[in-house]
Amino acid sequence: MRHETFLGGSIGVLYRQIVSKYPNGVKFVSTQLVRNGEKIRYAISFKQIDNEINTAFENAFIEKIEGLEDKIAKLESLDDMESLNNSYINTIKEELQAKGMDAKWLDQISKILVKNNLDKDLIMNYIFDELDDSLIFSKQDKQPPKIIMMTGPTGVGKTTAIAKMANYYKDKVDTSKMAFINLDHYRVAASEQLKSYANLMDVEYGDVEDASEFSRELDRFQDKELIFVDTGGISPFDINRLLETVSFIRGASSHDLSIVLVLCATLKKEDLIAMHEHFSFLNPDNIIITKFDETSSISGLVDFLRSCQTSLYFFSAGQDIVKDLIPASSDYLLDRLAKEWQNIECEAL
Image 1 (cartoon, rainbow, N blue to C red):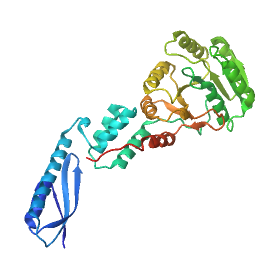
Image 2: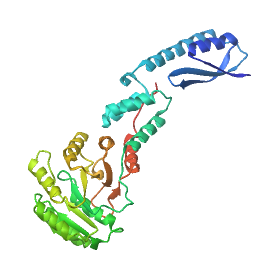
Image 3: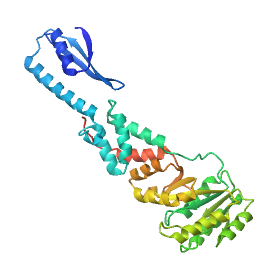
Image 4: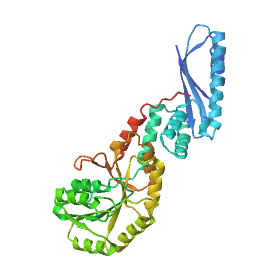
């Protein structure tokens, strides 16, 4: 029994060449698609056998593989990936788009994947790798900025995030060398909450009303190594609050402020995009995402983080100031996504 491989541009033509050469029949081992740039070829491996080939089976087989060739030819000529019905790639793309991933980004990924013969696991791994490459993370092993100013919409957890970060950095900076400054005089009991954290952690506390006082307070704390500044939550429609925050930043222009935008994982992707655009005039250095514990779906969030191109600083998943702050990492996001996407069902082409 001899093993051979025929290579050519058409499965049907190759099959007829094999039958012509070995009229008594062969046992097929494998059929492979071989891509060289834009050129497609097929490799058919087989073993010669002695029994005569069944003509009816031969005709049925030829008809089947010619039908497969037609499908492949159509797929090779398609630019619009929506026409890839019943394929792994198309089904995965549709399901991920429904979960909140961007259609144009998925199209770009699909155009690469369709050129390669990959199974579901390899397709998903490729998508995870692309996401990993597109996310930007702040390095946590370096010394933190001296002044960290927390900004963001109302109710995202800025004040609690300050307490968590102070606890996180206490191994690098003693709490006696830290200070909290409150600029929020709109939310009920905002100053009391931050002040209670300061008392709990033995951190100095300051409460200021306007931009000039803010600058003086920063001067008062010039011997501190780490200062956290809490600002009031800002609605996208509240221009006065927006301008007030700008005035605080300008009033402290002689100090090096690191602006952190705090957003929460429970926001819709459209709202995350709007909030990021709304606060972009502040040129935030980093983003903190809170309330991971309050949502089971983060696809839209990850798609936003992929596209926003601002460094990710910390993730928060609970109210415990000791345990629930996580240095931002792709491992955390991709592990969450893997669980969310594990039930994606798809059919082969």
